Structures are given as C-alpha cells and as structure tokens.
Image 1 (cartoon, rainbow, N blue to C red):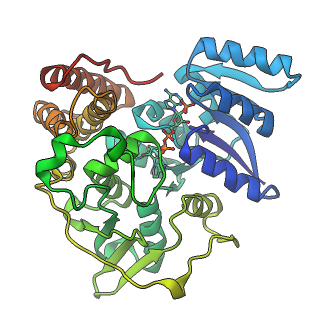
Image 2 (cartoon, rainbow, N blue to C red; image 1 turned 180 degrees about the vertical axis):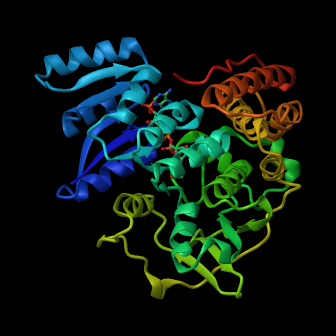
Image 3 (cartoon, helix red, strand yellow; image 1 turned 30 degrees about the vertical axis):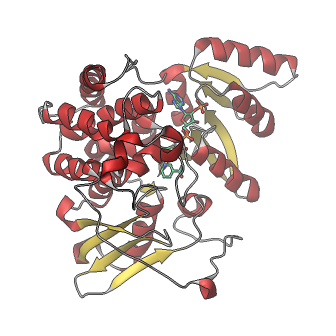
Length: 397
Ligand SMILES: NC(=O)c1ccc[n+]([C@@H]2O[C@H](COP(=O)([O-])OP(=O)(O)OC[C@H]3O[C@@H](n4cnc5c(N)ncnc54)[C@H](OP(=O)(O)O)[C@@H]3O)[C@@H](O)[C@H]2O)c1
C-alpha cells in the first residue's frame, strides 16, 4: 500500500490524482491533503478520504472547516493552514509519496521540504523547478530519491529515457499543441479575450497553465523544467508544435533513433505512471491506434510567441532570471485574467522584469523566495505602467 500526500488536492491535477487513487484502492491510500481556498471541495475530500491531515490556505477557513467536520460527526482529521500547514502535509511521517500540484511558487516551500524529508515526489508543479530547480534536484540526488515528472511532456521523456542513457541523448523534442492562437495573426493578439485564451484546444487544466499554454510560456517553463530534470543544456531541448497532442514528447539518441511516447490525452496516465514507477499496471486508458491518421509538426514561431524566446534566454542565463520569469508571468497572467492588461502585454511585462533582474547566486530556498518577491514587486510596477487599472501582486496564501 502506497501512502499518498497531495499538495493542491482541489485542483485539476489533484482531482485527477484522487480519481487514480479511487481506481486502485488496494494499492493507494490518501494520508494527507493540502487545498487552497476551495472550502466546499476540501470538505467533500475530507468526508470521502478521511486524511490524517488536511491543510487549507487561510486560518479562518481552517476554523470553518473544523466546525463543519465536527457538525458532520467526522473525527480524526487534523486541520492546519497556511504555508506551515502545506509543509506539514508534505512531510507527514506516514506519507511515502507526495504529489506536488499546487499552482505557482506557493507550492515551492512544501515541495522542497518533501524532498528534504526523503519523500518520493510526483512533480506536476513546474514552477518549482523553474524557480528552484537546481536546489530541488540536488536535494533529491542527495536523498537518493527520484523526481517523477507528472507534466505529460516530461513524463513522456522519462519513459523514453528508459530506452537509453542520458549521455546517449542527442536532443529532446518537447511537443506543444500550439495553443488556441496558433493560427491567429499577431495583429489580433491585443484584442484576445480572457474567454478565448481559456479555451485550450486539447487539455482541460487550471487557469494559469491554460493562459501560459496560450502564450507558449508554459512550453518555455517546460524547457527549463526539462533542462533541470534531465540535466541537459537548453540547446539540447527543442520544441515542436504538434497540434494533435498525440505524441507527448520524444527523445532523439546519438545513433539517430528517436523514441516517442503517445497515449490518450488524460493526465491520469502520467499520474499513474509516477505513482507506480518503476512498475506499470493495467489501466482502462486505451489509445485507439487504428484511428490514428494525421501527425503534424512545425517549428514554433518565436516572433509571434515571445514568451518562449524569453524562457530560452532565462534558461541559458540561470540564477534569478528564471525566478523572475516565473514570478513576472504569475503577476502578468493574473492581471490579464482580471482584465487589467491585454494578452500581448503579458510578454512585455515579463521581458522588462527579467531584463532588469541580476542573475545573482541563489543558494537557498529563502534566497529564491526573496528574488521571487522582488520580481513580483517589479512586475506589479510594470503592470501598473502598461495596464488599464491597478492590480495586487501578492501570491496566493
Ligand atoms: N492541469 C494539468 O493538466 C497540468 C498538466 C501539467 C502540469 N500542471 C501543473 O500542475 C500544477 C497544478 O495545475 P492545475 O491545473 O491542477 O491547477 P489548478 O486547477 O488551478 O489547481 C491549483 C491547486 O493549487 C491550490 N492552491 C493554490 N494556491 C494555494 C496556496 N496558497 N496554498 C495551498 N494550495 C493552493 C488550489 O487550491 P484551491 O482550488 O482550493 O484554491 C488547487 O488545489 C501547476 O503547476 C501546473 O503548471 C498541470
């Protein structure tokens, strides 16, 4: 029986993880859950899963949840809150495996502490690796524990790498659907609405990652994530647009062989892979191979989607540049969702913040979080400069 902690249990990945756990009750048990502000979902999960420990973002919500659980006669669940609560969920002694699926840098501290506590990590939260990848991967190496990617592209690469050694890799090909604006002329980008940007062609995901997919910043983060997970320079991590999202990614080896992974577009599959690694177990997620007709590939348009260029530049520079890239993107995406800046102003805000950030030397999570705060503040100033009305730059929680 594998005992699981889920950080971000009320989100898209968190809920998909619970569906996997539900399908294999003889294999997996939920021991701790961390939610944010969705009290309804947190209560329903407490009722269904009876975790030992449950965390929510705010103290007042924790009090309300305790009262509700008491009234419903549900006992034995300790309710905690805030970042200390999330860390407690991630480091609970009973947990063997931690799924890191809080969105943004709000999940960083708990993810790092989980690795430090020797947990095996299933990593969906790519922002952790963008901001503090060197620290997290170094700690995982020190603990002798694998970092198992849940992000579908990196999960695909992880699977393909079982066909060869990392020294035998010529390059990685990360596939990108191209997002909803692949065929939209750049001249129309300033008029893109929030509803249009949230309408992803192939994946159903949380809001931030959906907007990041529309700007291709998500692919940029994935380039950085791949560099850090697989210890490759940015030049060996290539992106190709593949609108069908059938092939989740490929690894090209030095002898010219290319291994690709494809499967249904359902996040339960990479989650199941991570939860059962190094084994594979039967599932009902079948890909209709005989229906396969078309696989299109094209290079990404870096002029139309400058976020991807910015990510490559930050990946090459390293240090606080990638921290700033993520923090500025988080602020800019929130401002776009609030209607304060236009779609094509997202990369403008990020570029000005990243170019004003020194690379520095980040040796601790505290230093990463300080750099994150500084970049957030600078992004807020940029948003106010270019935007239509002021916004808050505070991270959630
Ligand atoms: N969705 C996908 O298919 C997918 C694929 C690959 C990678 N990822 C990555 O996985 C992560 C999660 O994505 P998602 O799509 O699942 O996002 P999502 O649906 O927006 O869910 C985010 C989760 O984080 C929680 N949260 C937010 N702020 C918090 C805080 N301060 N403290 C504690 N919890 C907090 C939310 O809680 P409440 O809802 O309760 O507020 C929710 O449970 C992201 O890093 C994303 O890039 C997602």
